[in-house]
Image 1 (cartoon, helix red, strand yellow):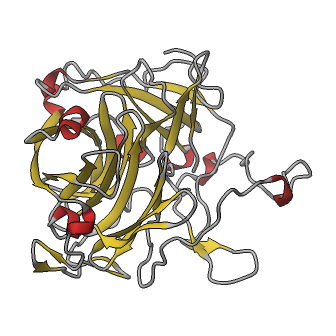
Image 2 (image 1 turned 60 degrees about the vertical axis):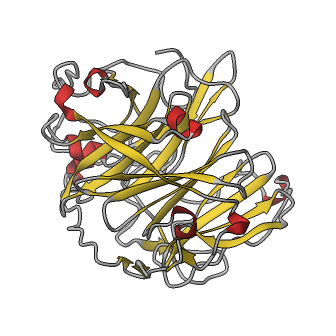
Length: 394
């Protein structure tokens, strides 16, 4: 690999799992045909209160997706191997004298976004384009989004995504701006194991959309996506109803942008049939999202971290891994996942605290819920010409 990272990924090249002989693992790649289910008129011409004239359904409440039973992922008990936990070198114990002060930051715009009530979590997500800002959050009928211009002026009032897709959604939304194609992508999942994509027909996010839907034999939880030059990539945590591993996806971006009748997705599940303790490691994974106009010459990038306190192998150490995924949409069995590259990090402990609502707010108020044990959306990539860089956080 090129020296594309100044932060994490310089160091020793390793094979993480000796069983990753992907030429021999071709049966692990699966394909689902995404069907173009709708081309919408301009959003302003839609009935904002119904789906194809049918009433919006309540699919989500403060407890999650209604009717979906997920047995919790119990294998990833934090610090099960506490004897392996070293001092966390990144743990902040006080204000650093070198920390920037608030006065050093310049805020260009500051305006209220959507307010979410009755949902835990609200799953706030946001994307920024040349002229617009779109925020999307969980809603009782799936997902709710709103569009502003970059001066903070409302361009489109809050709208339920199901009115665009024409199908009942269940939230966990993600919005992306595809800088390469100058398009917008709004996504959510459903309680019937679907992943839904609404791709704008033009650069105007208030215009028409092509809607694609993908159905799976498992519940694809925690979907997160990224824009890349040869596909839209993504991950999910898979439940049947217990956690059975995490899948990576390559969606046929070119077909979606062209508005083709079908747009396939090629996926691969990381589970313990691939190698020992693979499901645990894969739980922290995310695909990498391109920022800026210059693309990488590599195929889709994925990254994840390994907390040694989560693995029984005494040789495991705190590390960050990356790999590439090259899909073949015509012959999925010819898709390729590269060997893992790894860099050993300073020791860290990915356990935030003993409860999910433990982050205090300045000035008081309710504690904020944190998500530990996985990378946080999104992992940013930028090609600066002379070097390439990736930034991840958890």
